[in-house]
Image (cartoon, rainbow, N blue to C red):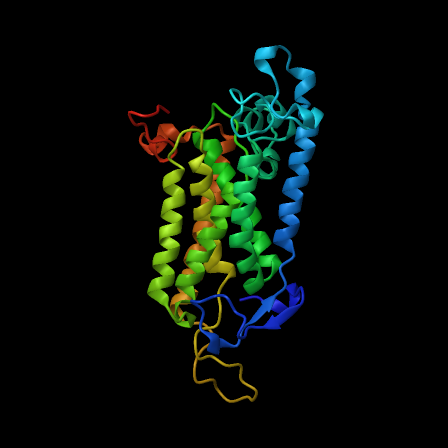
Length: 318
């Protein structure tokens, strides 16, 4: 419901080159030039390089059986695969550089880790997977809604993911932009629902998006994956989408005179979703932060929730 001119990064009319198959062309909406998402990608790459510089595997690993991977990279070489199969730094380096660690957040008052962890990655595979997903998801959203709203969703969703992760995973460190990425996915879903009238192929869009989200959340149940960050980021982004990604309903046109409009800019259900989502968002983040800094363990309040992050099978244990 905000004025999009404030966040203009150069915009162009939506026309024949529009690649959003589901969007109704008759709306006459506009695109912004995407620059924030590329900047975030570059920042994540730069941070990973800095982490590998600090890690300096050859200096800290000795012995033939503990050889660093890709030693030709010098101090940028990776930890032994038995220690880190994702081709990245050691856990101690990640912790030093700002990884999410419950004890440091709660007992050493390092709340800043709730945000810094989303700029760190466990390895080159982890980094590339997240950045490719960010490009695929984020550029489309930034083109449609501008950098301010997409930036807010990214950061606040990352925070929401970190809070839920800290409440349930208190014996390990966590890094990655996955919570923020799932926030963008959640925002895409709520944007589709609240702007339902402007989509030409509603069912196809909904089924496609739900399928993508379900597959990714399902993969989060594998070992060594922080699915609580995914879930927390998704729920945060889902609420934010109802609040900051609202579009005028189909058929509305700005009045050029003082006469009454034939159709209201926003429908009643859009206002209802806006209020409910805003309340749930504020309450959820507030309660989560209070529980976290009081040292609460989420597993004590939800005995089965640990299955959401890792589902044990005959092939692996959690």
